[in-house]
Image 1 (cartoon, rainbow, N blue to C red):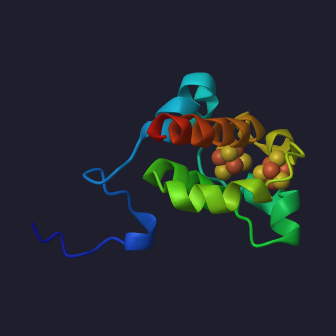
Image 2 (cartoon, rainbow, N blue to C red):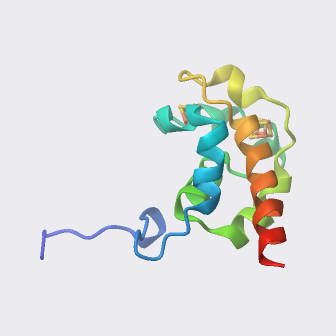
Length: 113
Ligand code: SF4
Ligand code: SF4
């Protein structure tokens, strides 16, 4: 169907190819991620983002799109300082989200071997 507009591939989620294992794992232990309103406060204050090309909002998008390889590349750039939690207006515990992504990556890698 032609809606007269198109979506940016870089900003969309393809639910037919979506690998939701890591997202489901994270939400099981940190459901606060569901109330994120994408305000960008975490990205603006992120310690790692100020020193590297790390972007915590982009990491969230990778998580929602199930981009396992990209998550593996980016996840260790987070310094686990917790500033993102202090500024978040919705109380999303991104530090814990990062820890859970790390655990999930190891968990599913072990399952594959
Ligand atoms: S500060 Fe909180 S609500 Fe805003 S984008 Fe980050 S996690 Fe989402
Ligand atoms: S815990 Fe990680 S994502 Fe959050 S502000 Fe610190 S470096 Fe950035």
